[in-house]
Length: 433
Image (tube, rainbow, N blue to C red; front, side, top):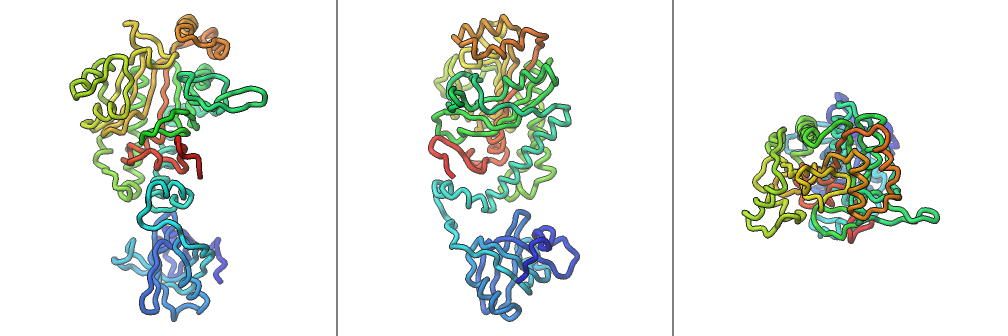
C-alpha cells in the first residue's frame, strides 16, 4: 500500500519532474484491458496521464483493485515516465505500484446524457473535462477582474446580502424572514457602493445578486455573481470607456495565460484578439431604428429581449454600447438627459447574440432631483432615507455599472447556456443540487 498522499504529485508536476520514479494522485478517466495489461488514463485538475499496468509487474491484490475499479475511482500510481507521441499528452507511465483509494460505485454518467440529467448530477458532472475547464476559466476571470480594478486603485468592499430596500426597480425580489420583519435578498449592491465612494473614491463589490424573474432564457439565472464598481467624479462617457478597458483586459489575460483552457473548449482565440477599445456606441433611438430595418416590430419605449440583442450584435466582432435609454424603462437613480425623455446610461451588448453583459449609468447626485424622481415613481421615501441622506452632505457626481460575471463567461467561452458558467445554477426550475 502506498499510503503516500503528501508525496504524490499532480500530473503536471510529475511530467515536468526530472526524477526517474514519480507518484501521481488522481481519478480514473478511461480504462481498457488487453492481454494482461490495463491501460488507464488518470486525470486531475492539471491534466491527464496514460498509465500502463502490467499484471506481472504488480501484486495480485493491486491487480484485483485496478481490474475492478470503476471510472472516477480515486487512485495513486507510482512508476517511471517515458515519452510516447501516441499517449495523451505525449507521456505515459509504466506503473510499478498502485493503490485504488476508493472504487465506490459505477459512475452514473455515460458518454451521452440529457442536459436535465447532467443538471440532476451536477455535483458529479463538474468532474468532466469540459466543466473542469470552464471552472478554471471562471476562476481566472474573477482574478483578472480584480486584477484590473486593483491596478486602477479601487477598493473592494463587502456589502450586505439582506436589505430592507429595493434596488433597481423594487420588483422581482426574493423575500426573506428576518426576525419579525420581511426583507429581501439583494438584487444589486450598488446603493451601498454609492455610499462608499464618499469614503474611498473608487470602490467595487464582487458578490452574489438575486433576481426572482420567471425567465427561462439561456442568459438568466436567479442567483448570479455581479461586479459593481462605483466611481466618484465619473460621467457616463468615462464610465463606458472604463468598462471597455476592463472587458478587454479580461480577454487579453485569458489569451496570454490560459490558451490551454481556451483550446480545450474550442474557443476562437482570434475573435478574442479583436476585443480592444473603443467599442461602437449607438443611441437607443438608433438601435430601435436598426431593429425595425431588420424586421423587428420594436418601437420607442420598448425594452429589448434576447432576440433584439441578437439582431443588433450578430454581425459585430466586438461588444457595442446602446446609450440613452427611455427613462420609463430604466432605474430611478439614473439622471434624466436634457431631452427630458432619456437617461444618462448605457448597456454593453456582447457580440454574436450573447446579449447584455454590462449595465451602467451616471447616478443622480442632487437631493432634489432624486426625491422628485422617486415621487414620480411612487416610491416609499422612508425605505430610502439613508440613500437620500448621501445627497445632503458633500454630494458629488458619480457613476458606476453592474457586470454579470456569468454572462461575461458565457460570451467569452461561447457557451450555449449560462447555466454552464456557474458551478451550481439556480434557475426558475432548478434549486438542487
